Amino acid sequence: MLLDVGCGTGSLLAELKLFGKTRGIDPSREAIAICHNRGLRQAVVGRAEKIPFPARSFDVVTLMDVLEHTDDEIVIAEVTRVLKPSGLLIASVPAYPWLWSSWDTVLGHRRRYTAQTLLSVLRKSGFKPRFVTHAYIFALLPVILIRILKSLLYADQQYPSDFAITNGLIQKTLLALTKVERYVALRWHIPIPWGLSIFVAAQT
Image (cartoon, rainbow, N blue to C red; front, top):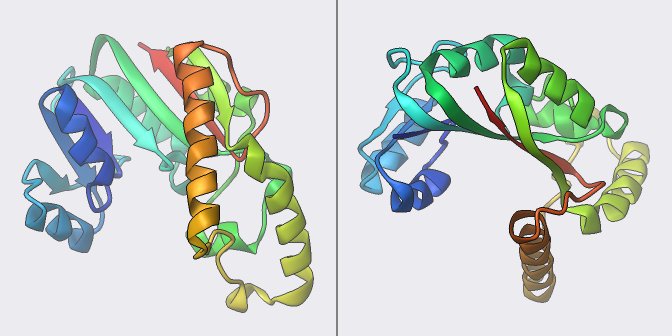
């Protein structure tokens, strides 16, 4: 059984169905309604800090871009509770506190992470890291430059998205680069040393 915490409108949840029975939770009733309209009836309203399922219910829990919005130690403790022994957690978070910008504030982030701070939170709840990698290394330098420029041009309340890319060729190029990274990290088990996000797989 798989649980997607912070499932949103169900994009990942729909993919996880290929691997077995799934459940999803999200605090947004609107997002869960969209899941249901898509046929994802296994999604329910719920908060990461208080997962509405019994202990030892799941083999795998995913936390994709969730921890940075929450009290992360409470969330990880909850994930530990609902995972079965030797259960797997897969999580992603935004990287580098020094990369903080007004866009993080707009998104409701509480923090950005280093690999060390993320692993510290996991280990406090007894998780054993199995694989850690950064992602989106190709976008790191452009985003640094964009954020420096935008911090000079925009007030916080006017700060536009860092990722509003509408050019089709650029979108296809970025998608191709993402697939290359995924192949290197997942098929060859070679960690990406830098990038905008950190991904971790850890077991109880």
